[in-house]
Structure formats: structure tokens, C-alpha cells
Length: 88
Image 1: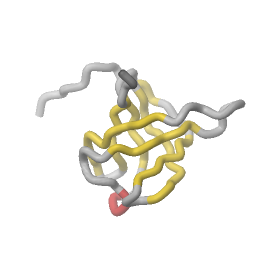
Image 2: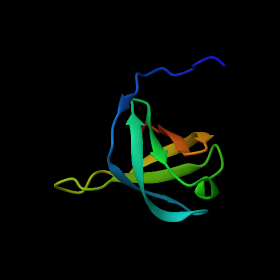
Image 3: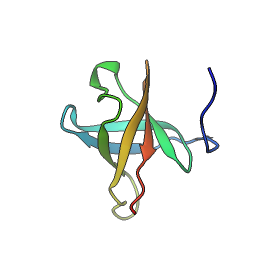
Image 4: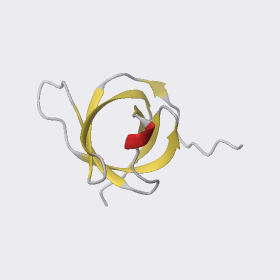
């Protein structure tokens, strides 16, 4: 299997609140992050379909972090890879 990643991943632990209509609002933890996206730890039965767009917001910041759109690009037994969607 070839690695299609464009960005280097960095281990990173924080809490993110994500929302999708199929799972509602969930508080999840991150495993790693890159310039292109983030991997969040999530129960397999709560994973939105590949291609779904979720919103996310980092929690625990001194002020309100921005809410960003992210696309589900891969699912693993312990969570999902989310790609940051850039505003054009």
C-alpha cells in the first residue's frame, strides 16, 4: 500500500468537538495532526461515511477556536482521518 500523504504528521493530543448529522455532537481526542488534517479517536460505530463533511472545533483554548470543516478521508478501527477543507 503506498502512502499518499502530502504532509508530515506530528503526534498531538487535544480535545475536539465534532459534529455530523449522522453522529450528532461528540467530544473526541486527537492522535496526530498535520498541515492537511487530523486523526481523531472515535468508536467504529460512530464513524460517518467516507466523504462526509464534519465540523470541528478545538476545545480548551483561552478563547473560542474557529469552527472548521473537515472531510472524512479514511477510517481505521480506532478512529478517522479528517482532511481540513480550505476556504477558497
